[in-house]
Image (cartoon, rainbow over all chains, first blue to last red):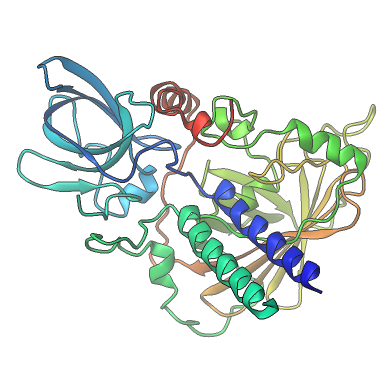
Length: 132
Length: 277
């Protein structure tokens, strides 16, 4: 009897753990415990595309060296619902970027939000509703 | 002791359920420090619209809003051929090592167009049939309603060629259910994002039931004895009539998808993160 119960729970647990594999997209590559804050970042490219939009920008590191970053956000459909458009961010914009960096340590990540020069915040559709 | 074990197992299972569901959603999780809520989607807003009156007879015309993904049914066992095909398919359009046709924006084919990215659906009545249009990828399928039969021996010498979206005929079952039969779909397409295969001889039945003015329910059933040991419902879905008839542009663009993989997915180590080397 106990074996059957254990087997049932194990099966249910396995099936449910499988669910994330079928989710739209995970963020397991990123350290989502804390966003890196990059002030004075200059946008070089904004791709309003599928599967996800992404932003490329330059920001200086602690030593003053320019680092070329890339950060993804939700799909155009998801971001469009929360106020973004294809032209919300443009090359040359100087912004503050809150980003969950890749666990590899490379300058790539998932955006939390972008704060424009006028203080307007553009949040990511997935991880933008966390306070950092 | 026995009760303690059962309770512990139940608690563990519940915890797994909650963590699994939280990870599965492309939405913010409920964590301390979370600020204002993400606004509801158009589909979520329409859920409060109510029935809107009775369903009109033999009329699905217009634009309908759906959820991002439908509800999957229980998969039957695969045949030995089905198993061998399934093993070859590596899902995940976000992975550099996947062979998901979606990764480089190949056409979904059918029924994947009804099992993947289902936010928008539209119907238009034509002189001899009904066009079913899918928002994602702007897919347009023609369902002939003039009594013609489906082609036979598709994909064989002397038969019709298989196609991305096959061949479809339809009829009304009662006042409010459109039944669509499809076969002849090119077998290089997958039936869903999980990578399940199909043969050219697959027969798919879609049943669209307009239960009232604002609600449309869909069941997609597959019969493919070459690949599966019995017929099965692959997905069910629910759509809401969109009063403003607004659609969104959702295109998978090959150059953008490749740019995304090279700029984001590969440098970020997404394959390593999910265990693919």
